[in-house]
Image (cartoon, rainbow, N blue to C red; front, side, top):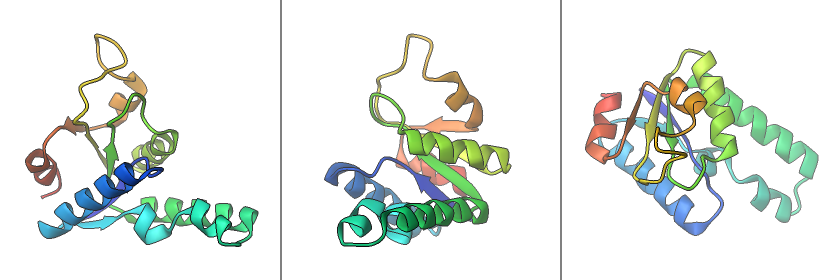
Length: 138
């Protein structure tokens, strides 16, 4: 089982949390693709002098191919609103027939009825603990 981890990755907390989740899944025998680690960060590459257009195109293609190659996608849903990149990745995975799981430890919701129905509609399940998460992929 190979799991693509879709999550915001724009600050130290987000990047650290993503690595922790990836390492946890790896420790229980689940292979992961973590874009910030396995694909790289476009911002960092462009800032280091890489061509902006080529880097952004290559990064997009790399992530699309990783979604195609994975068995499942894990969407980290914590935060006030879901990350827009995550939403696109989830849509691709859903249309490709991948197993789609949400992980949310944040109690905030869009409204009293839940979160965005288009996101929830793509997800097989939303879990809130690492044990529940592990059981989704074993």
